[in-house]
Image 1 (tube, rainbow, N blue to C red):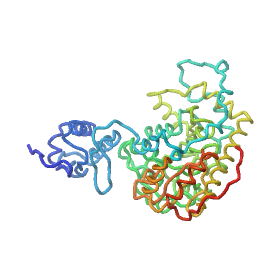
Image 2 (cartoon, helix red, strand yellow):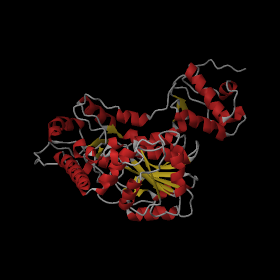
Image 3 (tube, rainbow, N blue to C red):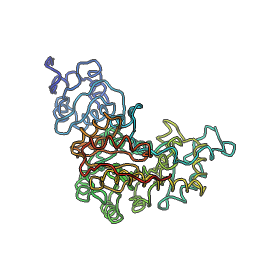
Image 4 (spheres, helix red, strand yellow):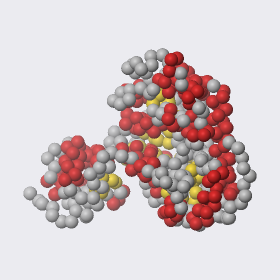
Length: 462
């Protein structure tokens, strides 16, 4: 038997790896390579053989090896580096690598601008809507796709006439459950670039092959999408409303054009509406343009009504929603009836809507104040709401400089699989008057284009 005794930081020969694998199914290859990683025989930094090379030595199809590599990627044991191949990361448990970086903020930070989150002071008071005695079947172990009053309220306010609805515990869970239901390891999935870290992590977790398409001010670039569709993808993932991070929004004409391109396609569209009812206008959704085709529309209520509601609503065809709901039975089975009932009451209460509208206005004012104070309009793209997508001379230097002053932000590399531009995302949603003295000292150190010394701002009330 061929023994590999060379340095494991380089590419391991396919012959050596093949000789170490007995079970030649996709699951078996993944399991035995994982054992080699866990035992230290394949050390971090080792470059694995190409799919075709290893498949030839194992006498299996390249799809079998590709599926095994997809499983290892789900567990974070290896990562794909494009033409550089697949590289060992080390023994891991599944975790969202990019989103983990986003969420691991420093609790000692003077001003947290890395997280795109609502201001708790601007949310409706959930306690006023919790009425457990009025919730039918409370605490019963009986699965429901969605609480009937919530479905009724959701249909009334949905951006188009919906078909089937279900409630899940967050927008990202709606996205992940959709991907787990409809995507198999090795499937091609079209996704926008840039995209939020959690979307990229979710795609990596299900072991698909992301096919990235660029964006302009109106949405997905049509020429990129045409090339992507030639690869026979199974799913298209996009954001129909205000895009995170670039702040633009898909135009009606672009949505029409994309729907026309998908007219004869069985591809499933999964639309992630993270901003929800905070948006100033309804999103231009593909779902409303191809309702006779397979689609899932995910709407989160975390930013508009509160993250501790742990609620999102998905809409789609009867078959698609039933499939997602069935898959969810492996876990929670249903979302809290108590919280669904509270959200339904909010959606029916004019006072709660007034609170949401006031929050939308305040977020807009805070973002505008930030741009005006530091003359950043030429360095920011999109209209956004909770964040700015800021052009900087050097992404890494800007992130490090801000962090050194106790102001976390997110670099563009978390939103890209390819070479990122020099941009950072800074959240403006919690910029109250107390934040300005900190920013006045920090912003000049970032050396941003068009930056001037801060001026005096008039105060405003939420």
